Amino acid sequence: MNFKNIQIGKMIEIKVKEREIEISRISNFLHCKEEAISKMYKAKSLDTELLLKWSKLLEYDFFRIYCQHLILYAPPSSEVKNIKTKLPRFRKNIYTREIINYIIEQINSGAMSKTDVIELYRIPKTTLYKWLDKYK
Image 1 (tube, rainbow, N blue to C red):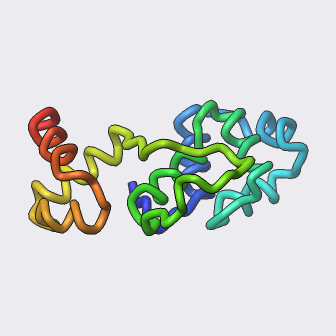
Image 2 (tube, helix red, strand yellow):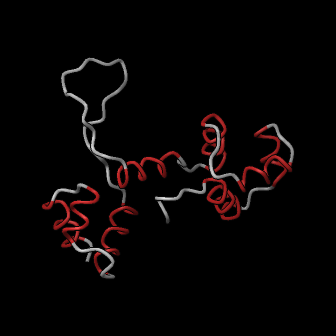
């Protein structure tokens, strides 16, 4: 899984094939023609409303792919803790099993050192060592 360069249309197409969903069902659910669905499969990004529909149809959270991208590649927040906002606050990063596997694979293959991972992805040293011990 490449979390850096997300091709959401391709991922949707893969999930459709895995679930063996008929194109007619997709067309009815999304209220569009087969040509539009083919275009979506080739799209690098989709409107959030449309992506939400795909997530419901395929019973898969496609938004989580973007969350993983943010965890791995977004700069740390410089947000001041006491500023009031009406938007929800998220306490910490949640690392999925896929992310943990990816990071461990990078270390085991020699592509990155432990220090590189800690600096690049801002993962606490103790967390990384716990992963390495737990998921050998």
